[in-house]
Image (cartoon, rainbow, N blue to C red; front, side, top):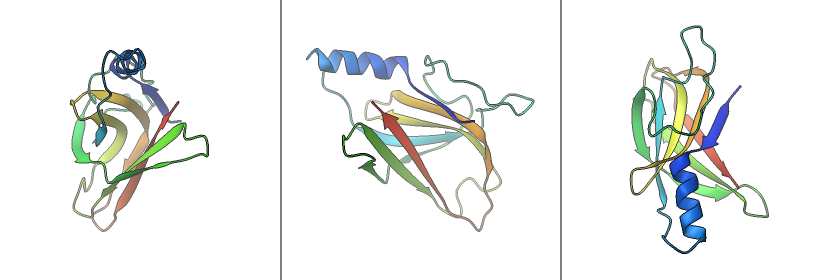
Length: 128
């Protein structure tokens, strides 16, 4: 089962922005990695103190975003992996990075294998 968190740095930035002490940086990149499961294949639960992916394979610019509900309290970020990207890799972790380079949200899940003749579209929701 997928597990996801807004990281400590993400929560700290939200707190300071709400207090008027800083402006939030835009989410600009999504990263993919293979470190989301343990040696037995069990999904590792994020703890929120992560500063990066455990085994980052690729970081890409976010293709776009959309609001999932009428209340606009969930923002969905989307990235497309092309046929030549991460071929024969097992993707089991994903993160959202802001323009300052900080990991804002982190998610782990069962490995997704990618063949060379496939394109993948990854969505990651930031829920408030």
